[in-house]
Image (cartoon, rainbow, N blue to C red; front, side, top):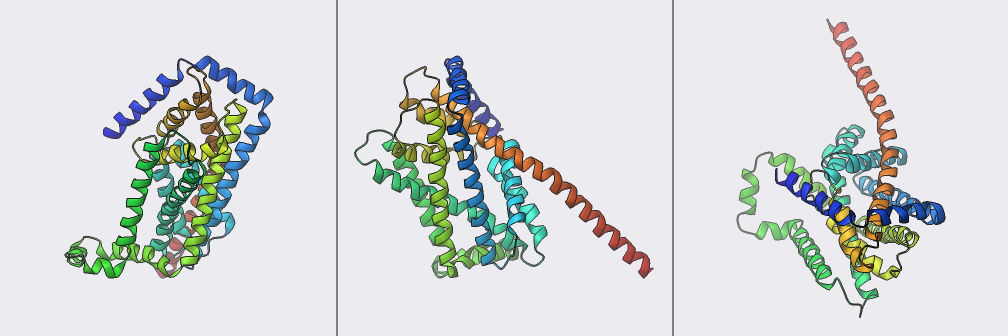
Amino acid sequence: MLKIAVGALLLWFVVRKMSPGWQTSKQLIVQLFQSNIHLLALGVLCFGAVLLIGIYRWQLLLFAHKIRLTTIDAAKLLFVGHFFSQFMPGGIAGGDIVKSYYVTNHTDDRKHEAVTTIFIDRIIGTLGLLGVLVIAILANIGSVGYTKYVVIVLLFLGVCSLLMLIVFNKRLMKKIWGITRLADRMPYREFIARIYNAFHYYKDHKSVILLTFIMSVLVHFILAVMTYCVGRGLGLETPFKKYLILVSLVNFIGSIPVSPLGTVGTLDGAYIFFFEGETVKGSGIPGALALMVRLIYALWGVVGLIIWFFMKSQFRAKNQKTAGKAASGENLNT
């Protein structure tokens, strides 16, 4: 109920902010399609590059566990996960659950490890956001604005990173009083232990972590380029170095699972909130920017829908074939 209330409040905020300048926003969007379609197209290609990097990054994490997922299969699962994160309840978490379900069908003895890579991928993506934010702060030294928001995000990400380092340090965890005893009494402790060990496994694969972190920084940099292209097409004159801060803050807010509709409401509201300070009141640009970014996400989500439609049919046929073989085996035994 709380999530529904928060989601409704966020949508109300977005609608309330967009309503006064809606006519202006529509005119800007029409102008974007008529005069600056090349900038919109570049923004669409930028997000495609983000997805391609995401495919390779996930493969690296899987290969570290000796899970051989082909590039085609990894691409299918990532696009399908993106579709569910955009159009289905649960947002990013919903997309990850769908990816987890399908990736386990590509391995028999490493299902826990396969699922763990999805969460590791999400964590490294968040660390990449932290990296871009640090770069953005250095690039904007002396600039005024958004300081308190940047400090809050940096503190939050810094504390989370510190907690992760503590949790995944086995020696340190064993020294903390009561942790071992608590772990022995936990339900499903074997399952939890295997997940924990799968996380801890990457401690011996520092090169994979480093490379995927660099790729995550690149992803968030490209997302800033994507937004910059759309913003320029709508007439926004904000310099690119400031986009690095604004888009990082927007993506951080958008990743918080407070709405049952995933990023709908949070991401759009964050775009409007942070970019309002870059324009005059009633310009319509923040609302138009939020809509165009949402459109780009949705376009690539449609690609995931098409892939899921065919993949679902293949998956059903495979299960029917397996069931048929099992039934034939039972008949022969009888």
